Picture 1 (cartoon, rainbow over the protein chains, first blue to last red):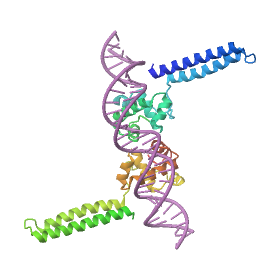
Picture 2: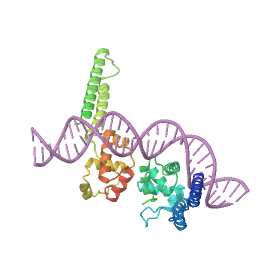
Picture 3: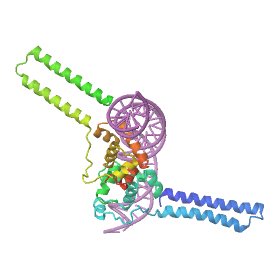
Picture 4: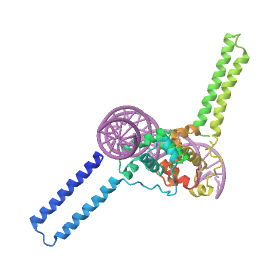
Length: 144
Length: 144
DNA sequence: GGAAAAATCATCCTTTCGGCTGATGCGAAA
DNA sequence: TTTCGCATCAGCCGAAAGGATGATTTTTCC
């Protein structure tokens, strides 16, 4: 697991533990009667669930559908050019008009990583900028 | 005629007149025998012809073929969006992967003018960057 | 288990892009 | 003659893109 992801999980785990401990202390210290134990646990459960959903999505980094479900990239050209699965994902995002930052946010990776992928793509497609890369990718049948 | 174009023609005209006058002076002053009059006139003719070709292209600013001779842009959409002839030309250049500077050099206009056209195109196509504009233009059938 | 490929991330720097604002001239139509 | 659309041009500024260089970790395959 990438260090930044691990750090994020550790950070959130610690934060959750601190929050839970704090709530427990509040419960013991003041013994608030109209806020029952069930409600407290419900709040904690909600917060944990939300964080879990976010962490789960980040860990899985599911592939975003490009919007043309019937299109299949030319596997032969992909193999010939040695375009990896991740590079193709970034290429599809570019084809949708996304900026590098938007691609990073969508795929839950850093801006630096996106720039590495786009730079590698430019080399493989013999392009110097994204409009050229997209034109060539379409000619080769890599994107719709 | 734009002031910059007029200035260019005046500049070249003056330069040509000065060159011709200078050659005439050289001819009278030294009477170089091994360089006949015919050769001098030939050199002058070549220079003038080259400049004339360049000036002629610049004045006419002929439309550059995009490379898909069978494609016809959707005239209905062009009219509906009020995309002018020049804006369409710039759009086609963008679709070929050219930078703004390259478009300016190709169409013999300034970088500022290209930026004005691309900005207007973005507004009409409801895009914020050229990859979005190109995607939308293709969807509307404005470019191949 | 080890090697290679893939994926990830960072930093620095230059160039390009794009928004904003402002401007002038030409040609056609009213 | 005036108005309007189009084409042209400029400058400033911040953001984004892209090249170069370097690095570590994970995944895959032998």
